[in-house]
Every structure is written in structure tokens, then in C-alpha cells.
Image 1 (cartoon, helix red, strand yellow):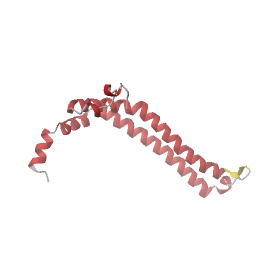
Image 2 (cartoon, one colour):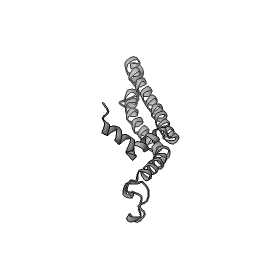
Image 3 (cartoon, one colour):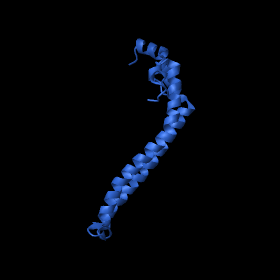
Image 4 (cartoon, one colour):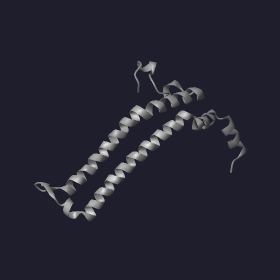
Length: 135
């Protein structure tokens, strides 16, 4: 149910107007597409790797029980690699976000903040009052 006051607010609220425009912006669509494709690729890769581990544990017990060094067998190595791949994917995502997603998101955010009149202290980038340090 939309009341008269909420309808009035939507038409006259600068944040609402700019966020609707942001949803139609090509740069925002590009940012959303980059994030979605990268996330889907990482998720698919990790899930496939996990399913391989589970399937090998269930159906290839002789292979998983093969000893490599002392009491260390293939199953144990696969299990440790699950943890290692989790951290590797997290690091890879952090690097990708820092280099590809964050710069575009920062530019879009700065433009929206400037348009709606956000205080300078809330905008990204150098802050002269803090000695040009980027926080």
C-alpha cells in the first residue's frame, strides 16, 4: 500500500531519484555484470572441486587410501587442499575486487554522493583535514 506521503517522498527525495538513475547507469550495470560473472565462475569452480573430493571419497576409496608419505594418504591431501583452495579463492577474489570492482564502485559512489550533497567526510578519496591520507 503506497500512501500519499511515501509517494511524495519518492518523487522529491534526492537519494531515491539518484539511486533510480544509478540502476539505469551503464557503469553500474557493468559493475554488477563483472561481479556476477566472477562470483559465478569462482563458485562453480569451487563447487566442482568439492564434488570431486566427495565423489572420490565415496567411489574411489582405494585411490583415496593410497599412501604418499608415511601415514599421509591421497584423501588427507585432498582434504587439506580444500582448505587451501578456500583461502586461495578468497585471496583471488580480494585482489580482483580491489583492482577491478572497487575503482569503478568508488567513482560511481563519489558521483552519487556529490550529486546528493553528501558531507565531504563521508565521500571516498583523500581528506585534506586529515593531511591528505586516504582512509
